[in-house]
Length: 379
Image 1 (cartoon, rainbow, N blue to C red):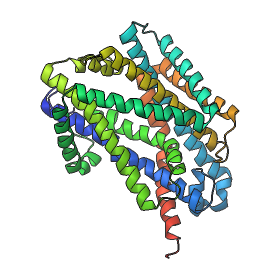
Image 2 (cartoon, rainbow, N blue to C red):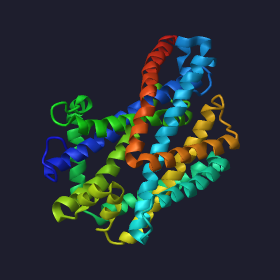
Image 3 (spheres, rainbow, N blue to C red):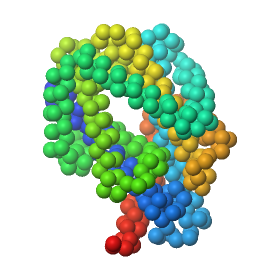
Image 4 (tube, rainbow, N blue to C red):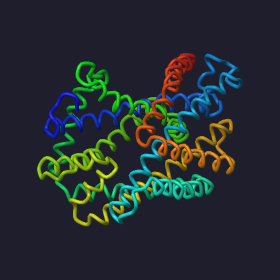
């Protein structure tokens, strides 16, 4: 942290609070802007489920011309690089876990091999369709994640974790304005740039993908129901997840000197497995974590190929298989190129680069949604 002694209790509180901040209401607010706009203009106005449709109050019929195409191209650009960044991070962590457990080679060629195998899996899932592919894998993932979550809680220190949750939630709520506007100009702006700015860029680059997905499952909801649900339900689950894993790791680090921070400092993708080593049945838990990462990898890429296919098919629900294959290969190719040219740094830079132009689109979405809603007749 920029102004706190490292490895201190204050640093631990700072870490948990910023984990809540970076993964809490703010990213889901970003997703809400996009998803609410798409849902409103698609279901209420009967327009294609595209980002360009949301600009109808400003552009009119020009959304079907070059101006609308440009908006959709920016959405595709953000989705490709945002998803590729996640695939790169996921592949690195899967590779680290396999190396840690089974002594696999640490060469970058192995990471590329993992991406290629995962590509074959998620393209097969995408071709099977949402009901037979994405939905089945997603349900399995939720069950596995929940089981792993409760095992870590039960085998760790539940009272400590509950105290961490209450304390961090209170600190997050009390300081949310300061957290939102703080950039540490006098005490480490670089920290804010490398963490907060990167996260905001990453969420923005994911917003066309997640926004379209949330919009499609929200038909029939009121705007109030929609906003409250999207901002609260995933946020609370995220807080529970971070508290159980993060709070348990901090307990091991501060109370038992486990040395997890040192491992994270050397290779952040190994931190999870260094943490699980301190639990009974560590091998089984680590294997479950790797399986969870693989399925998350597959479902994210699978869903992204479907969304990209939809964005390039006029917003249609039925996407030709050849488009799924083309976008699946494209996502993997981008992730591999970024890993080969710059590793983690290249992934972060591309996430920020892809997000900037779409940030301007999101500001426009706020304006066009306000216009659209103001045109509604009062019943």
